[in-house]
Length: 381
Image (cartoon, rainbow, N blue to C red):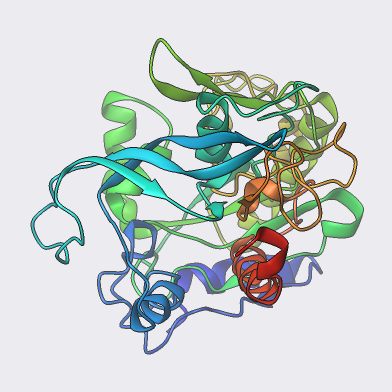
């Protein structure tokens, strides 16, 4: 069920001597509906909602959904700070949801151990608004997020792009030397409309040709910069992200963009464009008519609000390190400052895991679950 769009990436890579591979796909009996980027309504993708969570519920775990946690509760005991629960609120369930286990309203949970799994944006935000100690001012810093640059090819024929299995082919050919991947993924037209460049009639023309459009992305394994961070904005009551590409990462992304444009032309595209309004050379925007123009990608500056760069892999904002000067949690995921508080998500990664992080996150959760169960006495449980 690999669709035409995947085969186009494979063809372009093969033409230029670039190795391409098949993803190991975490799905069963895919229907090829084409809504992968919007979430599988048929539960064929084996995500944690239908694996880990379902397993937990079958073993008697209580799940509270439509719930927002405002703060983790800390108490001083014997000269040490200890996590003892959480406070939050439960909203009314949306139609179609499973029955909740508690009624809507204020919620207070008492717990012998608190495991935080809010992800690399919400975990540091929750710790900050809970007044978790941060003597080294490192909470939320060093955000990495695998910035990705879409590359769009206009073909002379209609292709199957978002139907079928939309993400099946990738290339790690440049991972060791340049730190990036080519990955095939194509979204529903609503998703694609956000990625396509241009406004007004120009954008409308691109959408009219949607069925003749191919695309894949450059996924950059970005460098750690402590200035890139997540902070809790008390005035706006939300997490705020500050992120800028380093100069070194921009240089690698320019090379990756140039190579990706060449790959798309080698696959048969008549025109290749990037989601950018930056002028390059004599072109008012990076819309290329021939492969030789790909060299103009060297002039890209990736200016905010001029070039669209996507991301889905936020990591490393509550870093793991045995040295409390470098990390918020130790190698067990335990807070250096608060007893019986663990962080178990991608925020605990010391740096980028170097690939799509789903399996790494699930493996960490499985390991920590087994470890905690075997070391209950460590937590006075």
